[in-house]
Length: 495
Image (tube, rainbow, N blue to C red):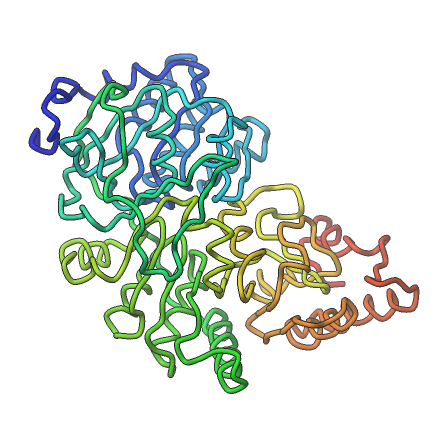
């Protein structure tokens, strides 16, 4: 294991997790690797949670995105978190956030690194980074994600490294490490296709910052892969039919444009649907590579994918990382302020497919809050892509919980993506192409195409009566949230 530390003067920094975690003090800002369960801290942050059970210690924790192995929940339950950013998916932490016990900053994933470099966030006291090995010059090779690790390595006062020996050293070369210059003298990021590599293979790190090195041997938490059900399959069919029509009209080719797909079963269903289509030689420029990404590669349909992490099931993990020579020329992992940077999304013409919690009759989308007040996960990268994509597509089921909840409403209870950033809305009922439509046209298109039958008549009545009252975007403000209020009072949005 010691040979994974190729800079010999750092070998005396090897210690135990219990000793290394003592470097983290109450009130510190900690930056950790990890992006959607991939490449996260396996021992230091869990050890911090154990410390917090008996010590008064609270930190501000910044990562790339969510952590695996229940680490966020362990930290929250132990009272170790004062503030968390920029994304999470843990039910224990979510409860603590919604009760006000933990403060949460829900950020666009492209912005965290920018805010740190611009001194708009507190300095990072210590970084905890998972790596495959330390190179001779002291630079580090990430594992299954890059996330914000490049920024943490550059700006943290001290660094704890977790060398994960479960990740083979031949991951060297799958990462493209590029750090844009600080303002106001920033150059153009020279990526004009998903497969362009413009950086180095390792993350630069000043060896003098390394305060401790800990060895681990533990895989990432496996992704929860749900098979497509009737609703997600219908959503996928609507999207694929729309793409086919765009090709027929000459707006796209059978190669489409680079695809971004959010995580979860809807995204997997859509990507899986490409296996049964006429599309070929597809590319991705996204945040997370899931099982369906590698399935499409194996099927010869997807030729290249760019992202910031690989988050897959246990079986897919073994398939990819035990046969890396087969895949290494087909994907690349980048820092998230590159994978999510707005300028590249606009330049490459990304087709962005993301999930909504609810949307309203004018196309405003809520992707983060239940009932307008309780955070679910966070905005993630959906905002980075929605505003800048060639096509911005949001998907959700038309109704849920035995149809007691409609996901299309008079007005969303929280707005993450305004009508100006949304092109296409899709439910299991149908698809609404909102491009080129005025608000009143958008509303009628959504009601006609996307709403569950149990709610269509009432939503049409709301819109008709609002139009009688007038306005560019007609609303009945006294009724706009009546469906949410009804659900809170009765457990159903139905009258």
